[in-house]
Length: 344
Image (cartoon, rainbow, N blue to C red):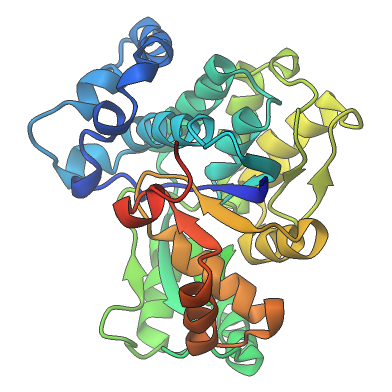
């Protein structure tokens, strides 16, 4: 019997120490594709993804860099999307932040190699310019119950700080029960000073992350458009849900518009991952939500997004856990216990 699935591709921050060796461990049969990525890296005088993945030691200073993390995450995530069992019918593809680039390749709007060119180019540009930074802060408690008043309060504080002299701060990603905020150092520090520490770790700065999805990235977007031609983009084979919750349908995509969104709005405006997941649930009603590797941290944001949307009547963490225990519908391929549910 066929199982329908929405595939969700992760963004930055998902290739960490436990993921070292992911390509070789899970995808030894896809080395030919990885070597084609290595050739693209070689042309840019960059270390190959297979060499980075097979290193004996993981260091945050190296592996959190945009020009290292992005290509590794792309290779791992795309290979996972290609490895799904035959009985899984992928009805739509989406992703978080950089995961949108991977979604384009997973859905066929970019070839594997052209998708790699997009990811490697943008990851390198982000690292070279490293404009601003990011932090994460939750607006829900441990129970995940929606708290729109708290969210509004936090966003009002962001707007207040952004209006202050010398401060840049904006919503970067709407990520389930979390707000990812981005700005310059003054803006980030002002937010950290204005909000209490919660759950013993937030507000949390993200290492080597620029002010993604804000107007501060306009120079990166412009350089990306200059280096990546519209001719790379084509009609997808599967529907894609972008960072606004818009669906791009096969046979009805304007490649120019897709290029323009990907290297324009997607880079410089807030990314609404929550809305993308809720659109996926509402419009495609899949049996499974499959989060490709590497890592498994995005699973929580997917679950929170579904709870915030009251999907299948669940409105908090306990209700999600009960439904998930009864019949697992959220599968993170970065977790060995769940990976086995969706690969041959």
